[in-house]
Amino acid sequence: MPAPARYLDHVERLTEAIATGDLASGTRLPPQRDYADTHGLATSTVTRIYAELARRGLAVGEVGRGTFVRSPAVGAAAAFAQWAPSPGVLKGVDLAFNYPVLPEQAEALRQALREMASGGDLSAWLAHTPHDGHLSDRRAAAQWLSRRDGVAVSPDALVVCAGGQHALDVLQLALCRAGEPVAVEALTYPGWKALAAMRDVPLVAVSMTPDGLDPLALDKLCRSHAGRLRIVYTMPTLHNPLGGVMPLAQRMALVEVARRHDLLLIDDSAYGFLVADAPPPLRLLAPERTFEVCSLSKPAAPGLRIAYLIAPVEWRARVHAAMRASVWSAAPFMAQLASRWLNDGTLDDWIVRKRALAAQRQTIALQCLTGLGSAGYAGAFHRLLPVPAPMRCDDVVAALQTRGVAVTPVDAFAAPGQTAPSAIRVALGSPDTDATLQAALIQVADVVSGRHRA
Image 1 (cartoon, rainbow, N blue to C red):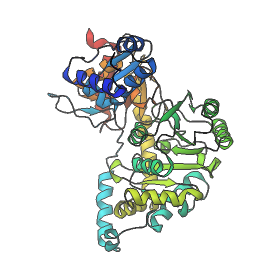
Image 2: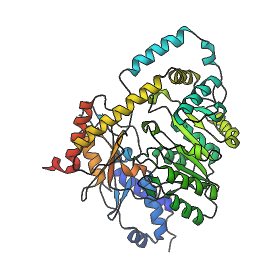
Image 3: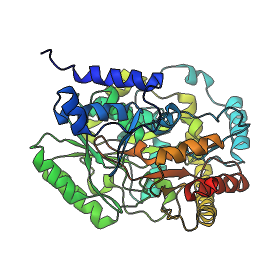
């Protein structure tokens, strides 16, 4: 009897069948035990096959229903790929990504460019900069963070990165080892997942409370991995997509577990600026083991591509080496532009405006999605909307795409091996007007409620 085909052979065979249409979108794949019996495989091998299809955006597991083939368009949404409206749709509305840019920001940029061009040493922008950034830029960021936290931050603790995603990339390069597991929340940031997949870094899921990562579950996971876990990636201040804000007691419990098992903590605070009264960041509770990423993509603008990475003293040399190996240093022009807005209070003004905008957008969302069970933080730029059975999440995403509205299925955030709840994340930050947002949310409500079938 010939040996069973290797695990990847089955993956490629199913991938080709999906690409050719032999396995159509919405087709339910055989139960894992049935597939294993048919092909002479272990059930654990079939689990790996289906998980790889899900990682490629070709299939999705649904609680209590099985694993289904998904359309390429929906797979792209699940992978957080850039989206374009369906053919025949003149202009789409993006409720998948958050780009909260205020109307006055373009003019502020124009004015800043004029002033920067008319004075200062322009030749400095054409030269190499230190791996951690110019001291003046690190000072500006340190002063801003010190005002935010009420505790002094040293410029030496900071590294200027080329955006939040680059900061996460630097951390994986500096800290992670191929094949060594990293703990993440059961629902985690897709950008971190994508980096880990490229580096063969396995992610292990930690169950969550409504407010974020569960320290008791993390402690149990550490014991089961017998010292192999070293790193935890988490979003304690305004979790994406759940919208929870971890309370101080839960943060203290997390720090206690981290010290007990000698864990390094990565605090991604991409949306943290929206929480005016947030508990102290993990960095202040455990400075010897916490890395914090403060991106300006949301409080300023995604095109700025500047973030600040704060690292414990004993890890700074390795972080600097990772910067050198990746992009050498962030673009000095962008860094100085960011410093200008940090120093003159412009960014603080924008944060106040964006907090008000987020609250206003939440009010609109609550009105449009009344009775549909949406959930989220009152000051966030997104809400979580459940998809009721027997409707499938993929069908909702696909139906909205045909109407020119992009949303994200929540399984995009699911850690490997986790089955996400049947829900979509509705981002509120990108539409240019409230009226545009309202019209798009009405389309979302129509599809999710099933009124579009009437």
